[in-house]
Image 1 (cartoon, protein in one colour):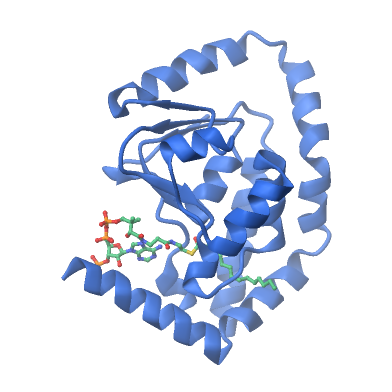
Image 2 (cartoon, rainbow, N blue to C red; image 1 turned 90 degrees about the vertical axis):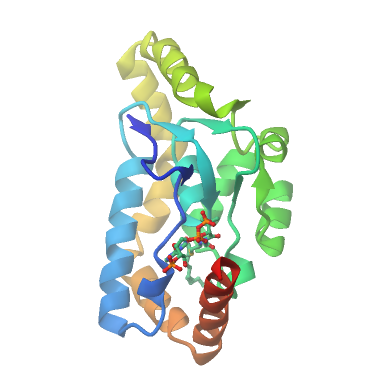
Length: 208
Ligand SMILES: CCCCCCCCCCC/C=C/C(=O)SCCNC(=O)CCNC(=O)[C@H](O)C(C)(C)COP(=O)(O)OP(=O)(O)OC[C@H]1O[C@@H](n2cnc3c(N)ncnc32)[C@H](O)[C@@H]1OP(=O)(O)O
């Protein structure tokens, strides 16, 4: 399975910030449950999963990419990373766990505290993506890599993938409701709503 985007220049802009701003607790819980299930399915997928990152990939977009088995990113102006702290929010533990599994403890600690967004070359240098190529070569490169992975006996690959990811998946599975409730409580704090409001205004201002 290849994750790609139809939006030029944006692999994924992350979670819909407007869903987290001035929403109701019930809607926040439903929103978070949908995200949890999507992520559990992706990270726990038995399929070979590859990200064709042909544009920006902040926050939830970075989570999607990191949750794949292999990442190819376009060189140039695009950025990738978990930038949550810049929005005044905190990456949930399962976002953090996936990043830890991808780039290790020291790089994750720096990346998360700074809310760092990396260029493709920087992302390559810390192991956040596996390959950087010109934009037009992203999809052909992914397809070529997929052929390599498809040559591995499927049962052996799936058992290996499952055992490598089980602890992280089980950690969320065991506390889904608590995590959803925590998200709804956290996101509706006055201070967090204020930060999100300012961030939304800054996105709109950038456009004008
Ligand atoms: C103790 C532990 C506690 C833990 C509890 C949990 C805490 C909560 C955790 C929540 C985790 C959050 C994950 C996320 O994914 S948050 C989203 C982060 N995303 C971003 O910061 C990206 C913001 N967008 C951009 O930077 C740019 O839009 C982008 C680089 C992606 C593209 O730039 P471009 O110039 O091409 O396009 P525009 O900026 O003009 O955007 C076009 C329109 O789209 C709107 N937009 C963009 N991104 C989003 C988004 N994520 N959600 C909603 N809307 C978005 C943008 O405002 C423009 O809209 P208009 O056309 O209406 O102006």
